[in-house]
Length: 498
Image 1 (cartoon, rainbow, N blue to C red):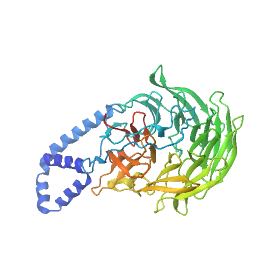
Image 2: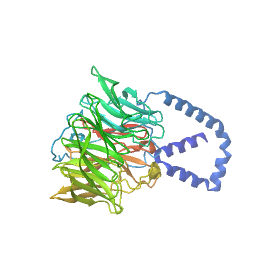
Image 3: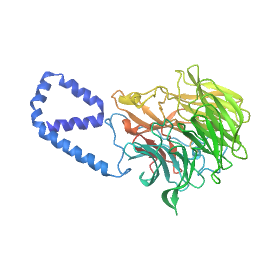
Image 4: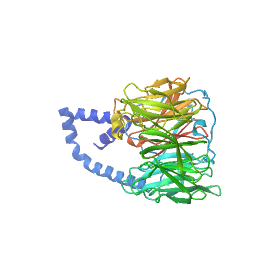
């Protein structure tokens, strides 16, 4: 009987839940049921041995440091294709180069991603810790902002082994805080500037004498300016050197890293998304309007313009070529992309996308004079993607052309929760996607979409089951052509075979 249980277990791991359904159906046959019952007593000792072996294995897994084991796959590793499509040929997308002098690196969209040439997938298991934001230092190391049951931590990660080389536990956040925990960027000194703890901003060194290291370099306490019960939802470096920040309740301010001087203004509208900055100031989207602000000499934000929009926005502002800024909104139960002029806030055009309505909680991907938007509609919780089910499909590109909006293409790719990132040198858009499965297997893929046509060029399976979902983590491209993303249980890297 033990051998039969072992065989069923192997089949279950290979083909997923459908094996259990077949086994349950077989037990409905009286002769099969009687045969299994007659041999059940023989298996008790074998079952005890299996349980003991499982306990020993679990204890060994707990003792192994984070990142030394791959993310365990869920049943169904053979139930779907590991690779679909064919390799892409680079087709660069033209865009005006811009670089904030107070960021550690170039625009991530200017990095190459994988082309799908025999792509290799590597994973690293961090327990039940999700690393929602990844940044690349000037030394090509990864800095991960991770959240687990024990709180938040910063990690410096080796991009080849995906193992952490340094870890720093961040201050605890207030219990019950509803603010996002993925607020971080790397400044020009490769410091991780992060909103952590109770209304604090930390600058943490990521290297010392060339070696990975995480040590607090500066701490700025915003509790005198942000009242109890509120929290920080956005940080962004201004081009003048000040750090712009926003709170959930609608307080927007600047912080001078050198002097610690803080200036604050109250927009009176809730903020849920990130901040965009350029040479002229900062752009903040609230639940009611998009604002452009500039900093006075004492750092106090001053309003330049405010443009109200209909419905609600699910994305941070994105700055485009030609002096435009884009956000999403939902009006008349239809998701749309709204383009505004940066100089005076006038509406240039609005383009509805996705025929079934749609919604998004993901950032837009900028492509020169246009954006790529993903449909998160129906992805209310991870349960929506269990047992091979998928939420609503939809990835679309909307361009601003001749003063109007044009839908360049729409794809039926399913990309719930993580948005999309663009690689302008390759002319590809990368999305974390899920394929529907009649066998009940939840398989996740990194999919490359042609930025010009919207055609899905290739996809590689990165994992199966709930641990392989991204949970809203953003895809990050490395300078060597790798793509990284944090899942619900660790990190994944995809790169072409060299």
